[in-house]
Each structure stands twice: as C-alpha cells, then as structure tokens.
Image (cartoon, rainbow, N blue to C red):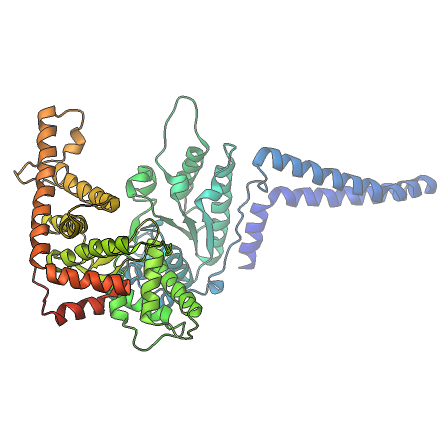
Amino acid sequence: MLFKRFRIFYVSYKIWFWIGLGSIILVALSIVGLAYMDSYFAQQQIATLPLETLKMIVWSIVSAFFFAKIMYGGGMFTGSRNPQVESKDIKVSFNDVIGLTHAKKEAMEVVSLIRDRAKIKKIGGKVIHGLLMMGPPGCGKTYLAKAIAHEAGVPFLSMSGSEFVEVFVGVGASRVRKMFEVASNLAYIHGAAIIFIDEIDAIGRARKFSAFGSQESDTTLNQLLVAMDGLNNEKGGNVIVIGATNAAEGTLDPALVRPGRFDRTLQVTYPRLSDREELFRYYLSKVKTDSSVDVGRLARRSVWKTPADIENIVKEAALISLRQNREVIQYKDISTAIERVDLGLETHLEFTPAERERVAFHETGHLVALYYQHPTDDVFKASINTRGGALGVVYHNPREELHMRTRDELFANIKVSLAGYMAEKIRYGNTTTGACSDFSNATHTASSMVWSFGMAPTGLIGDYTLLQGKISENLKDQLNQETQKILAQAAVEVEQLLRKEWDIVQVFAQELNTRSELDYDEIEAIFKQHGKERPIV
C-alpha cells in the first residue's frame, strides 16, 4: 500500500519532484560557492538573499494569479473543485433511502458487482463501467448514489455537470482528465472508485457538428467519452461512473449512453402508494403529529408527488400548525400545506355576496360532476378561498397511479371542466369570465383526443399534429368539427346530470358559501346525509 501511494505520488507530481530535487542541488552548490568566496562578498550575498527570494515569490504568485484569472476564468488551473470523499464519511446507507423500493433493488445489485469485482474478473466477466440514473427532479438520485458509494466501501468523487463548463475551450476537458486521473489513482489503491456526475446533461447533450469549430460543451463531452473508454487502465482497479439527469433519454448523446460507457440505466421514478405511505410516516415521525392523522389517505392524496415534495409538505404543515399556536400537526394542516404547495398562498380577495354565491355554485358544479361521473378521481377538497389566480378550486387526484388514460377518463375530465360553467348557466341564466381556464382545459383535451389519440366520434385515426402542413383544409375542418362534437356532447350530458341532481347542487353551494371549504370526509358525509351514493362509473 505504501509503495503504491509513493508510485502514484511520483507519477502525479513527477515534474515537481525533479524541480524540487534540482533546487536542493542548486542550493547546495550555492552554499559550496559561498564558502570559497571572500568573506565581504559572501556576507553581502547572504544579506540580500532573503529580500531577493521574497521578491521572486511575490512576483511568481502575482503572475500565476493573473494568468489563471485571464486564461481559465478564475479556475485554479482546471483542477477538480470538489475533494474526494471517503466511503466511511458518507452517512447515507440503503436503510436511509426511503420510498425507492424498485430503484434500491437495482442499486443493491450494482453494489454487489462492485464488491465482488475480483470474482467477476476471475470468471472472465467485467464490472460495469457506468450507471445512468434517470427520473424526475426530487426523487432521490443523488441520495441513492451516495448510498451506493457507502455500501460499496469505495472512494467517492462528486461533481456537477455545470462545473466542467467554462467560457474557454479546453478548460472543461482538462477538468475531466484531472478528475479521472484522481479516480484512477484511488482505484489503483482501493481496488475501485466511484465518480458521480450530477446533472450530466449539462455536458452530455447530443453534439452539434459544425464547420466553424467545436463548442466548449462538445470538447468536454469528447474528453468524457475518451476517459470512459479507458476506465480500466494499466494501473488496475475499476472506476465506475454514476450519472444523474432529469432530462429525457433522447437528450443525451448516443455515444455516451451506449453499452461500454453507461452499461445500465436506472429509472428513479415517482414513489408508489406504499412508498408514499412510508415517506409520510418517516417525515411525520420527525415532528409532533396528531394520532388521528390518516397516513394512508395522505398517500392516496399525493399521487405523483416526489419524496422532496412530501418532505416539503410536512415542513410546511409544521409552520402552519405553529402559526395557529398548536404544538401538534393535524390533518387539516397537512391538507392546507398540500394546497399551498400546489396552488400557492391564499390571496384573500374580497367577494361581494353575489360573487361569492356565484363562485360557490361554479365550484359545486365541478364537485358534483366529478363525484358522479369520473371513473378514476376522487374529490379531496372543494374551496372558494382564492389562491394564486383561481377564485376557487375543486381539488381532485387519481385514486391510484395510472400510466395511460382511457377515452372515458378524458371525456370525464371535459365534463368536469364544463360543469362549473353549466351550473352558473342553470342557476343564473348567464355566465361569467370565470370559466375561461375551464374552457381552455376542455378544448385542449378534446382537441388532443381528435388530433392525436384517435378518439374522434366518427373514428378518424392518426396523429394529425405531425401533418399540420400537409393535410387539406377540408380535413382540418372535419377534425375541428369532431372536437366541437365532443365538447357539445359533454355539455349536454353534464347539464342533464346537474338538472337531475339540482337539489344536492344547491345544498353544496350553500355549504361552500357558508363554510368556504369542504374536505373529503365532509363531502362524503353530505352526500350520505341526503341519500346520495357514488355510482360505479
């Protein structure tokens, strides 16, 4: 181990080693020369030596500083800005990674490959060169990379992709070379080392070849490709590169994601229902929480929320509870926190009594249509408190994660969007500008059904958005007419529903006008109190 370290030191600092040795020899010769000089001249030389040495050091430092400032944008000679981290110093294990069940299983397999690298080589196999983590922001990619390094017990070097990018061409490439040189030396000593590059899309985007020369990002990427090809060099040891990005897979250069560079792709996606329950329990255990809080309901309400979102919701709920002078977080605090994160702070606009009643009927239209006619979503909350640009909101979420949408679900979304407008029309005989965003959502959904999803009433099939400049005006008119048919059919059906259930519409409008907000349990209780049951859609 000591010999290996000395060898790496000599290889890394060979020039400085010989400069230092030469300086020692020159100093020795100077001392010998002074011994043979006349005493007066020898004393004169010795007296001026400290000042001359100080001047030389000062001028060297000033020159080096300005050279680095001008040529490298302030970077210290393109060296790596982040020091290495020993695995024992990383306090993140797989037990600390919560809510990533499937991703952890694949990560554990990678750790096993790193630990068993000697056995793998013995049978002729190869340790993976690279692991690419892809997924939405806030899902725990960086956290998982730290856990891999800790569990594997190897040195860990971490940098962000943006740290390689500079104005001057060649600086990023030099930093890549330096980082891989350090990693190779660590792998030679410890048997393996991990390089983690966060937001790798900053340097890994597809290259643009031009006759006018390369961009800095392209030069950096070229150096990264070359470095990843030579990971297992003659020194021995394995360097494993872990990259993380939330960009689409097609964004990265094909040469970067091919086998032999990034051998595996690990999808770090949104947590499932069981994972969200685990996340809520973990973060709520860190604060004082009322025992009546239903974690399962919170998990169902937070479909498509990331671990970072859930942590932020709990922290926001703690602040809300504190403002209300309570020492224990209640369910309504968490509910308010979810709305604040998703919709923004309350704006506290003052309605006239007539406006307030109209908004109550508008939101009730959404609520009743959603409750009776949506096949996948539940009404979690209805409110006429203003948030952001919305005068009211009916907050709904899918009951479970759905990765495809049926025609029934999309058509139900259109009916729910139009229900607020239709409730106003039935109650007052006229409508307001408050339905503008509802129309936008409904029209966009209907248009997508016809133009992209093959769900037109007459059976037109194809993605016509790809043929915008090639289809005839007659076909465009037909597609637009099909869109209007869907909207008109949705309007008729939702009007029939609201007129049929107008008694419960009036009840909810009165409740909202009086109480401003209704939660899931309160909504269910009112329906049951008036003998209404949710139909099976």
